[in-house]
Image (cartoon, helix red, strand yellow):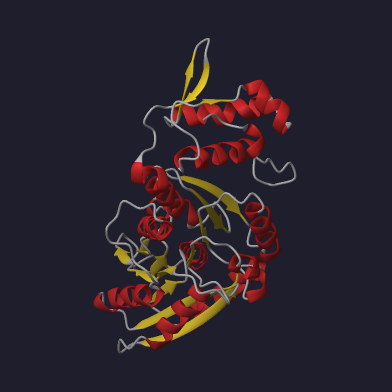
Length: 363
């Protein structure tokens, strides 16, 4: 049996690049056994004519499939499915395509995404990455656009909205869904979560072990579950020490420096724990303004173990939420639910990933 390119649908209005639409549908058709190995697939010209797409789009899709060993080009004969590329169980489970939705590609998430992609690649799967720029309306639109293609085998999402109506469209999809960092409102889907409370306890216990008894916590808006969990853990920490909290707002950065200066001057602290490494960086800048030695006058602990934390003038002690483990766990869980994991130990419900302390010079 050979390919019929007419069974492939390209949505010219979709935000998904056309070559990814073509590539993903071809992968699904090949690996699910829709077509027999060694079948000849249509020529570039046939794809161009039937699908109304550019030659560069076709070539990019086929080039990637060839690199991944799913097709082979034979000079003078055409392009064929690679012999033996699917068989038995592999035909039903290999080469799955998963959507991945994240708020951005800048802070925290790059390491998670890299782990997701590595785990997917290790098992022969493919990832379609979408970013939402912390915009719930954009997230909703992109979900609808992505599912209009109807060729995803599963979805990993870091949900943004608190409104269950934003995720109504997911209830009708007959695919597994895994959330990260936040549970999906109104949807019974497993989640891979940070243990934020444990991370804050580890940070506080570390400072107490260093002799600190006057510890502050620098909180920040906007409000997310991780923010509430970290703040609550600090407030509940019982380490026989005085504690004070300041909440800043990343949406109004021009006011933060002045508030932080007043807080550090009046609170009589010897150490602070920060909601994340970005906030720790701001604290370090304010310490320079105030002439505070770090850590001799004020010890600082961050959270998230961002790459810049180790390259500061005085490297930052921080909590590592195990981002690589979060990404790998999410991909393993999703692939297992979809039937495409090589792991024999696939969790069925929520998974909490443990953080760890990365001790450097600032404590």
